[in-house]
Amino acid sequence: MTVETAETIGIIVQTLTVIVAATGIVVALCMGVTDRRAADARAREDRQRADDRAREDRLAADQRADLDRHEARILADHHFRLSMLVRLARNVNDPGHTDKKISSQLAAERAALLHVLGPDGLPLTWETYVGPTIDESRTNAFDDGVEKHKRCQSEVAVKITDEIAAWKRRA
Image (tube, rainbow, N blue to C red):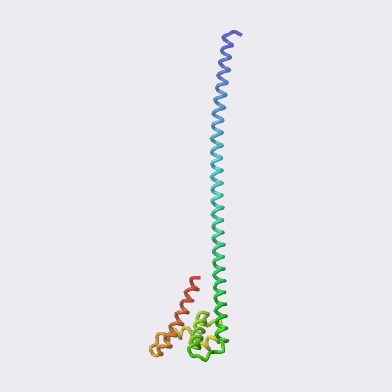
């Protein structure tokens, strides 16, 4: 082997080494780009899943809050109705008063309580202490043939009933 051949073989080996090294660098860069893209895709998927879970959690929390508010409204209405019934029971069971003014106030409170509670659950009590139905009260409130005091009573009864009905529609 001559010096020239040895130099040629050395140059060929060096060239092949450079080509192999360059190819390794290109392959490494391509693998890095591929890995980066895959990592980005996984990160996007993870973020999307996290967003979906967060959205589902918020929706579930909102639904639970809606149910809690609904239950609270039902309990508040029940408590309100029970307290009105207790007040009405005390009023109805009161033996009366000798003072006409206090007796009149008791009767007004009884009528107001009955209008708040409505005639449905207490038909006998309604008939005994209030008399006319809501429809009759509505008619009496605007009938010029009825004395003014009775018209005022009917107007108040209708207003109470309408307010309670509007409140129940909102709830």
